[in-house]
Image 1 (tube, rainbow, N blue to C red):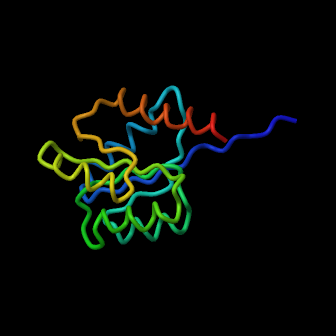
Image 2: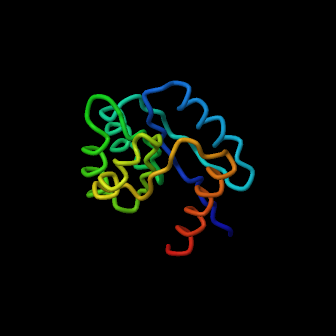
Image 3: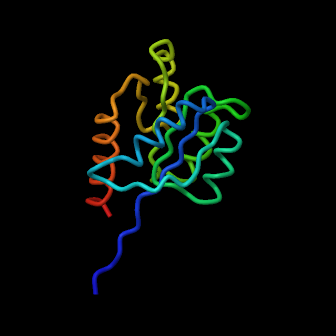
Length: 134
């Protein structure tokens, strides 16, 4: 009997509705991988609550989340759940935060000017690699 592989889970955290909505629509339209978007968060405190309620495979978060800082969230969460992929989003003016984000637990730092195709390729690559090491 074949086992059913659950869809990878993902949480999107950004304080801008347009960014969250755009990412959600793009991810739901992926052709080569099916991802379940668990929830969306508007700040790091809400993100923390969501992640500890249901641990996702990937978190896509803005480098500048209000309330609890993105850096505090990354350090705490990644320390407890190192297998969760943390993708931090920023702008060119945030590039000086790249090193700090990586030190605090981010797996990667993307500038927000990526294309939908690049988003799909990178998320698909993560899940392909994750399957190989399990």
